[in-house]
Length: 100
Image (cartoon, rainbow, N blue to C red):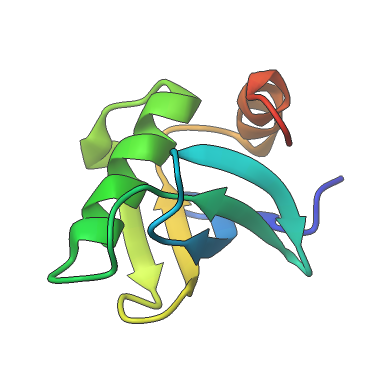
């Protein structure tokens, strides 16, 4: 269904486009082939990455330890692995999130 969600052997991989220093944390739709996520945190000293992990965990209702940035630590474009979930579960949780 969604182009930004892919299943792997370890879980579900999300292609994410991060917009740091936004007014609030939110899923803001799709940017190309990536899920656009706005974060209040600045892109300094890993603050935005930590905020992304916390936000994805909260949005998908999984512990932070199940969320891992596997590519793009220093980029706005990231691949985020969510272990322990199926693609269908991720799509369902994202559909409940405002503005997706």
